[in-house]
Length: 161
Image 1 (cartoon, one colour):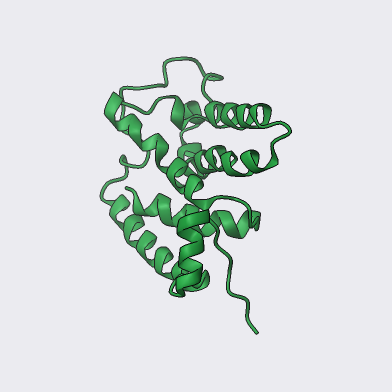
Image 2 (cartoon, one colour):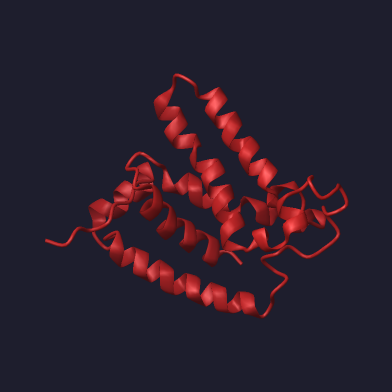
């Protein structure tokens, strides 16, 4: 399940934050980050609120006084939070709120994004629809807008005239 997270972060995050300096490419990659836990019999800490909050705190502390770096790297925790929302991890309360419910909730089960198969196929199809809508909404058929996305990670909605 990849398209759902890429499309969801591409469309939802710029609409919520409306920040021209947010690098949406970083957000999109970070939204995929928790999926790597499939390789280690997850879900583990990447699917917890604790790590997303810790990532936010680390970015804020390490980029103090460096506005440009902060704007770029804030995409990591934002992408991680986006993943938690889009895969419904918040519905697995003991995992989401780990370690508040104890330490046994991590590992040894299916990732939330893969546990609803074949429903995940519907989310991937919906992700394709969202991608096409975002392509039109952000005017990515225009070469200059597409270039801005690829080189700077910026997207901006086309305003009605």
